[in-house]
Image 1: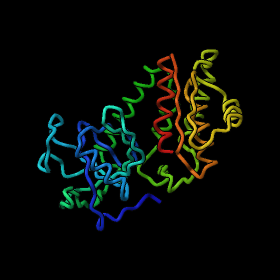
Image 2: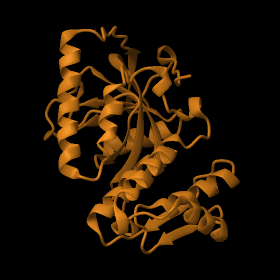
Image 3: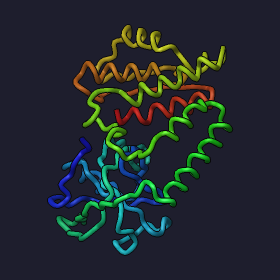
Image 4: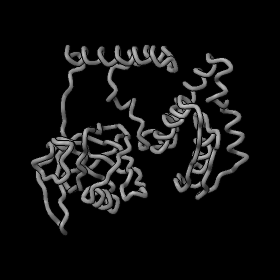
Length: 279
C-alpha cells in the first residue's frame, strides 16, 4: 500500500522551494543553503522525517514569510541528507501527497504548518487531459529520435500506460519490498541498447554476469568506500551497493565513487545512481 500519513495529528516543518515543484511519487535531490531551511530539515530528521515542500512566489527573495508562499505543496519524506563543505546541504526527498496549508503554529521559536490532503477527482477521458498527454508523448518522441540512445520501443510502452497514478505503478518500498525494480528495468534497457550498439557498447556496458561475479569477489562490507576508476554506466557500483544492503539488513552505510571520461556514458551512470539512493 501507498505510505499513509495522519496529517490531522502532525505539524510539519516546511521548506520553501525556488523554481521547482516536487510531485507525489517522485524522488529529487534538493540543494539547500538558507539557515531557516536547514533548521527545518534537521527538525524533520529528528522526528518523523516528513516535511512540507512549498514553492515561493518570488524565487529571488531570500527573507520570506507565509504571504510569499503558495498554499498548496507536497508532503515529502527526507530519504537522505549530506552536508557540503560550503555549509549548504543536499537532501534527497520523496513526494508522498499533495496538501494545502490550513494553519501555522510557532513552537520553541520554530514555525510548523498544519496541512490537509488534497483529493482531486481526475477524469481520464477529459479532452484537456488527453491533449496534454499527447503533447508530452510527442515531445518525448522527438527527444528519443534526437538522442539516439533510447530505444524507440519505449514510446509504444508509454502510449499504453493509461494512468500513471494507479497503484500497479507504485514502486515504493512499502509495496514492492526489497525488489530492485528500477535497477532491474534500467539494466534490462541498457542491455538491449548495448546489443544494438556493436563494439561501441564496451564503452558503457558490462554484462550483468560479469559485474555480479566481480561484486561477489569483492564482497563489500558495511562502511566500505568502493571506487570504480572506469565505471561506465555504473552497474558494478550498483551491484556492490546492493550486496551491502542485502547482507547487512538494508544498511546504507557505504560510499560509492566512480569516474568516467566519456560524457554520454557518465550521463548513463548518473541516471542510474540517483534512483539508487531511493533503493
